[in-house]
Image (tube, rainbow, N blue to C red; front, side):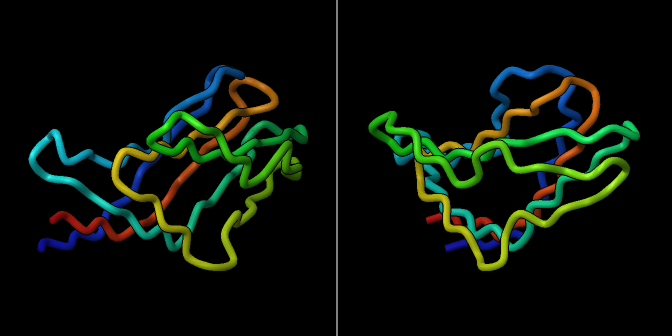
Length: 113
């Protein structure tokens, strides 16, 4: 079992759903689970915005973690107060309320079997 500290970074240039992280499945030969420690969202536009964070399970069911969470103009918000586990084949996705305003930086520990 290998463990690696990693981060994922996004510049949300659209209001479409954007994948932040996908847990590799057993079919890839290296199934992974990730333990997210931090998901920071920064607004660099000078205007307020919102972000939605969801997790999609291996059966394509979507679960909302944050729904239209407000961000302050030129501010940064931490979305997690406790670790978030993303299992193999699950997908963590973000959606910006406005294009070209938000950056997302997520820090996680990835465990590969």
